[in-house]
Length: 95
Image (tube, rainbow, N blue to C red):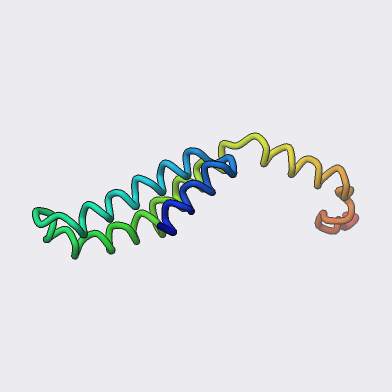
């Protein structure tokens, strides 16, 4: 029941893709742990879910962030607020 509340909260909060992903993961877990035919997958499911959560998801998120234009706009705002002289390497006069 709590899992359905979490999915509903995600959906109402404006994250429908995350809500569908959470619902799919919960549905898959429910299927694996309630069906007799999926008994052998009970041992694989926690490991595969961990791989998906801690390896695949961060890789996808990193790739998404790298192509996101908002990141470039935010870094431009930071550069505009802090002049280059405050964060650049010191320059030395040559003789």
